[in-house]
Amino acid sequence: MEENILKVFALSTARYFDQVAAGGAILGTPYLRAEGELVALDYAAIIGISGAYHGGVYYTAPHAKLEKLLPIIGEVTPDSQLCADLIGEIANSIAGNAREHLGAGFMISPPFVLTGRSGDVQTPKGTPCYVLPVTWNGHVSRVLVTIESVERGGT
Image (cartoon, one colour):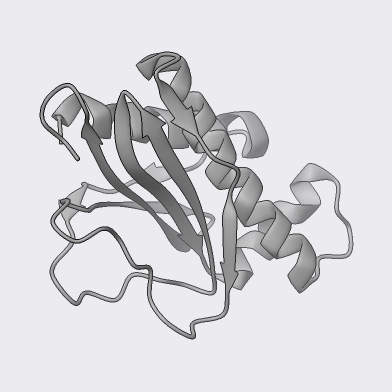
């Protein structure tokens, strides 16, 4: 994966928190996910990527972080369904922001939401998965990026 793609996702993630929560997101250093490393938190949303790129973008966060974000967007009574809706919205926003930089050939699917820690986030075998830690209001979440450019020989 190209380094500039990781930068696009870092900027896209920061932009989400800037727009929705008046900033405050601290982005950690992206790293290559180790085989077998558990990264899933209470909620996860997966966005499939197709077109000029192939792969997926994942956002995973703890319940407590989502509960803190919900009142900021006007939901005064947070519950698990609203948390599930929010995780999908965040993933979609991050991928949509990235699409602005990567062009119309960066096609995104609707989010697929997983709740609970029944398993871990599964990424395509043979495609590197980069993890971008995101801390906001003392809560850590993660953006996972596993994307290859079709032009550069990705699958």
